[in-house]
Image (cartoon, rainbow, N blue to C red; front, side, top):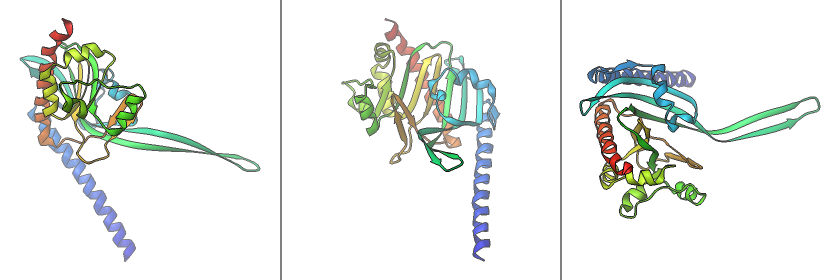
Length: 257
């Protein structure tokens, strides 16, 4: 009897997971129709040019795209290309190899310590935009150690809350400082979102849930474990991202001057 009970529990758990995955797919497909976007449950290669321009997608193993919504939306009456999808990937924190020697053979065993990250991401291509490259993530205690190693983030003395809450990195420090005018900094203080931008490309995803071990820092790279957006939150995050695009475009005058 205990064995059959165990099997029943396993079947119930698997069935529950399958149901939730299917329901999420159906709910997001409905959202895509409401936004007049195409929907691809298992992703589509059409987004390759967009993601290939962002550093965020250059790292990790076993990367997976699902529940892809893509197409065009309007920003100030101008078309902007957008891709919204669930994304997961695995980061290998360390690998080790052990050798065992016997009389007639050598055994090699490889071990790895990995961590999987999952989030719903919004990726934009806006040809009217040309921003300096930067990445913005929540700042954690391990980032302080990275700063000592020479990977120092960009801080603003007038905005200590922003500087304490975010890790801002860029190879174009002066341009990014000019881009981050008070209006943009206050936007990020109010709206807790992660961002990567370069040229005409913008990536946005939510802050991780509070009180979770949700960040991994390796050198100048910070990997943030966020969350899958609830279907009802997709449209608000889309609107928030379009507002961010407006701010970036408006602030580019300070970069050019």
